[in-house]
Length: 148
Image 1 (cartoon, one colour):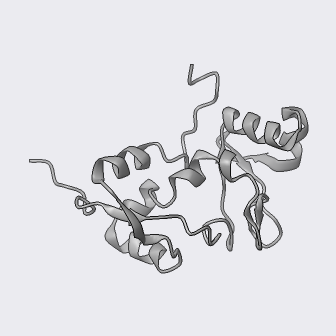
Image 2 (spheres, rainbow, N blue to C red; image 1 turned 135 degrees about the vertical axis):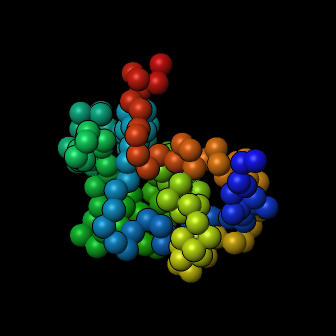
Image 3 (tube, rainbow, N blue to C red; image 1 turned 90 degrees about the horizontal axis):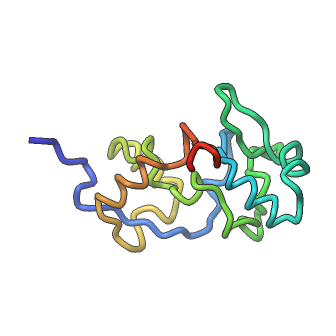
């Protein structure tokens, strides 16, 4: 019999837009080709203009958004929140159901101590959590051409 995940009864989350997941420490915000196109369009830029200004290539080939000097996402504004919220990358949309966060109750609890939206709001069932965690945008990104 297959062991059930520790979150079998589901987990609660509702984004409070606190921005705690948008900065505070070095990290990566992976973006794929479709996300780059959407973000460039939102900003009224061509992809050729957007890429050198807002992205950099990671070891292994993935692309990340740049961060500010204090490690905030380049699109996070402290008093306003995410400037590209409706076009934010999958990695941002998947928070806090990243595979690395739902891996264990301890990891979830550690992250919940910093994120006011965790353990509040609507209950997400285990199947939805697993679906998101398996495609959380944090690694192994597929490009627009690879996804067709």
